[in-house]
Every structure is written in C-alpha cells, then in structure tokens.
Length: 618
Ligand SMILES: Cc1cc2nc3c(=O)[nH]c(=O)nc-3n(C[C@H](O)[C@H](O)[C@H](O)COP(=O)(O)OP(=O)(O)OC[C@H]3O[C@@H](n4cnc5c(N)ncnc54)[C@H](O)[C@@H]3O)c2cc1C
Image (cartoon, rainbow, N blue to C red; front, top):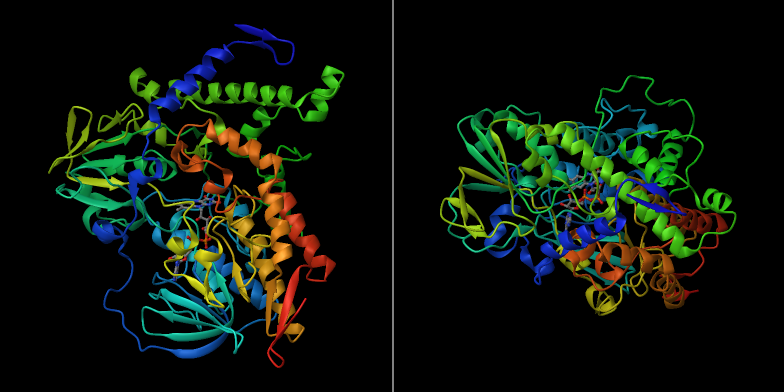
C-alpha cells in the first residue's frame, strides 16, 4: 500500500492508521480526566473494607523502640526487611493495614489473579530461598504464599503489626528518631523509617450518576466477595450459576477475571471503554529445569536480561522468551547501529522515531489480526481491537480472555470510548440502553500518580515541615530514596523519581538493597542520622527535570489513548504521571547509578548527624 526508502514496502497506510489512532483517542478524552474516579473515602468507604481480616481483631497498644520501621507489608516492605537482615540489621518491624503480608497479592484475590511477568523474574528472593515457582506465571495464591514464606524465613512476622495503619510520623530531632502513632493507639519510635506503601494499593471507583441508588451486589476486584460468588481464589464460583454478572473495565485485572467468571455465571456482561492489547501468554507448569538455578546470581542475571530486551538493547540470548520479549523482537527489529549500517549513514532522530512508529504499527497489526482469528463474531472482534501504540497501555497476555467472548453466556458492551454513563436502581446505563444485572464488579483499577500523603494516608513531619509541604510544587529526592530535611527516612516503591520498570519487583529489590546498605552503613559509622544535603537533591532533581528522554517519553504518552499512563490524557508534564518524574535513561542505567554510588563507598551527597553533639556532618 505504501513504500518508503527507510522502512521499505508496507501493506498498510501509516498515515491513515495514525489518523485512526488520533480519532479513537479523541473519542475517549474527557474534561474531568482523573476526577471521573473516586477513591474509597466518603460514600465509597465500604468498597475499601478488608474482606480477609478479622473485623473483631483487637490488641493492646504498644509503646516501644525498633531500629527500623517499615510501613507496608507488600513485596517492597518484605524486600526491605529481608535485605536489612542480610546487611545485619535484624531489629525490624513491618506495619501493614492488611491482616498478613502480601500487599498487592494480599488484597487482590480475585479468581484468575496472576502476575503478568514470568514468575522466575517477578517473585522476589527466589535464589535466596531456593524456591521454584510452580507455573510460568504464578497465580495469586502462590504469590501470597510466597509473601508469607519471605515473612517466615526472614523472621519478619516476629515484630510485625497487622491490621494497623500509621496515622502520623514525626521526626524527633532531639532524640534523633521517628515517632509513629497508629490507629490502634501505638506510640512507636524507630531510628529509621522506610515507606513502602506501594503504588496501586488504593482502589478507585467510577463516581457516576445513580451509583447511590444502584441496588445489585457490587464490589471492587481487589475486595472480592466470595460470600456472594462462592468459591475462593482457586475458582469454583458456583453461586454465580443463576446470576447475571456485570464487569466494568477491560484492563489488566479484567483480562484475568473475565474467563473465570464466564465459566460460572449464567450470564456475563463486560462493559468496555478501551480494549487492552492481549497477546499469547503460553501459561504452563514449570519443570524443575525451566531455569538453570545453579549459577549464583541467576535471578538478577535473568531480570537484567529481560530488562535489556525492554530497553531495546537486544542481548545475544533471550532468556525469558515470552510475549514481552517476542513482541519487542518485532518492535525493535534493527538497532540504531544496524539501521545506520543499512542506510550507510547515521539515521536522524526523526528517522529513528518514524522507524519505530512503523514497527509499532506492524506489531499492533499482528495483534489485531490475532483477534479476528480468535473471536468468532466480527462485531465483537472489531470492538475488542485496540487502536493505539503498544506501550500506550500496559500490554496484557492471556490464553483465554479473547476466546471467552465466543461463549453464549458472555456479551461485550462496547461503550465506544465513552464508558458507562450511570445506573438505575437495577441496571447499568450505557447511552440509551439499560443492562439489568444481579451483581456488578468494578475492575476499575487503582489510584495512581497521587501524592504520597494520599497514598499512605498520613503525613510525615520533620523539623516542623510536612513532607506534603516540602514536596509541594516539586518532588525532591536523592535517587528517589531519600529527601533533604527528613533524616533517616527512605522511600521504596511509589515510583518517586525512580525508573520506569515493567518488572516492579526488580525495581523494589534494587531499592531495598540500596536502602539496606545506607542504613547499615550509618549504623557502622556510629552516626545517629543520615539525610541528603539540599545541593545533592537539587542536582538529582535537575537530572530528572531536564532529561530529554523524559520529554520524549512524555510526548509519546501524551499522544496515547487516555489511561493511567497519561493521567487519562490530561497530564501536563511527566511529573504529573510519575510522582516527580522518572530517571530518564531507563531502569538499567538507574540501577547502575545506585550500584556505582554504593561502590564508591563515600555516601556522596549525604550528611550524618551525631546525637552526642547534635551536629550534622557533611
Ligand atoms: C492486580 C495487580 C497485579 C499486578 N501485577 C503485576 C505484575 O504482574 N508485574 C509487576 O511487575 N507488577 C504488578 N503489579 C504491581 C505490584 O503492585 C507490584 O508488583 C508489587 O507487588 C508492589 O509491591 P509494593 O510493596 O510496592 O506495594 P503493595 O503490594 O501495594 O504493598 C503496599 C502495602 O502497604 C500497605 N500500606 C499502605 N499505606 C499504609 C499505612 N499507612 N500503614 C500501613 N500499611 C500501609 C498497603 O495496605 C499495602 O499492602 C500488580 C498490581 C496489581 C494491583
């Protein structure tokens, strides 16, 4: 259909495709952006309640001191606890709102839940615990079980406080320690505090007209009501046999839920605003030799190999070899060097951008063709077809999602980009149509890119200044792990000025090792506190703010279909999306930056406090 000296003969028209993408994006743009959602405060409070905890749980308030308090018991908090232990710091207390460890995998027990990355690179501490995941992509129960395994093996249950949330944290300058209060009346002090409150731990709900009068059973996917559906996170949703179930959302969570509910419900109606790109997953049990685990450092090596692929570095061997890397194999068929060789000159930035855009069209055309092959009804297949670039929404991989729409009991209601418009007492309204349901599941995702105070539910105060004030207008960190004026405070997770990482646990592990190193080093030096100097924070923030790669990435996402990657299409800067921006050179460069800083040994940019003299040393 078109030919171009740079990209050769094409069997599609890139100009028409680009226009189609823009039209589809425009259809979905809404002036209220992120405001179309509400969190689990106020009228939605019931949606945030913990279905897995004992509501009658009580305990006496505690007043004591711990070397390190970690807020959050997800993989981030667990990794901090584990890496601290390895560094010789054993007096660690994890505090968690839920009734057990697991974080994401404690809350998200919906049927079909599983990680979307190969388990051998996603699950933390596999090498240390000599554990081999049972499936290529672990299911929710195994992920929760693994969280508990880490808690047990690293002795983190001993001092853990569950069903407890922090209400306030204040730095006591004269005593060089943190004072934390909780909703259970605890008064806890700690030399160091690590915030590992996650990034996607607050459910969000569509605040639509009629939601207050809607009577069918409703719940958010991360607070699954097995009392209503029957079964458990392994399946067997027998109580849905006579029910008409609705699901709002077709993102990464819904992709996993739909095939499970389809198996059990009398009818399933899926309300879609924007289809997700769904590739082949190739789920299977993993034989003992799936990965050669005899090589020391195998998990780190495998994670880095995967990350290299994502960055287009194309190492010699594709160790993980799954939907992610296979897609990237097509997406990045020629490196810049190879393209330069073919052209006989250096390609310009504009040529590279165009080249990658064309490859993206090719990749997405492949996915689009696959939908036509799998989904029988042409109208449904068309509605499930994504019209945007591959990275615009987190790509999904699933073996049963698309085929679920071939079942007689499953219907897709395509809202043509507009979303559900509201509710009557018994029905979901889309445009002029009403859809009666017995039960409605909100697979509507989580609040992201929100300020830390909102995410964690409490503010942190040091020297009379609240962190929310300190960061007003500009998040300030050194390496995304600490900030000036807040001694002995560390951030792990939340993506605050760290790197964009598809493998969130890889990032959490690198951060945990870094924080554990700093805390152990401070203790070894006999200092009472550590904090980055303002000049080192300024320098790091400068790197983030002036990164050309960040600007290019922001431009890319700005042109994408609305979603959480681009603030529902309304983000004004990269900082709007990633809590203060990201390290633009990518995850591997960021990990190198942290490692090299540690290896230099000088704790560059850090200042130490001395309790005896109450002086700060640079
Ligand atoms: C459904 C789902 C699937 C995902 N799948 C993948 C995947 O396949 N691959 C991937 O890389 N990433 C995935 N993610 C991202 C995932 O969140 C990370 O992989 C990782 O589990 C995050 O760990 P975390 O400890 O940083 O945060 P979380 O797991 O969110 O844990 C944070 C914990 O902090 C607790 N907390 C928050 N505030 C307080 C407070 N004030 N007091 C006490 N406790 C508090 C919360 O209750 C929560 O349990 C997924 C996320 C979701 C929601």
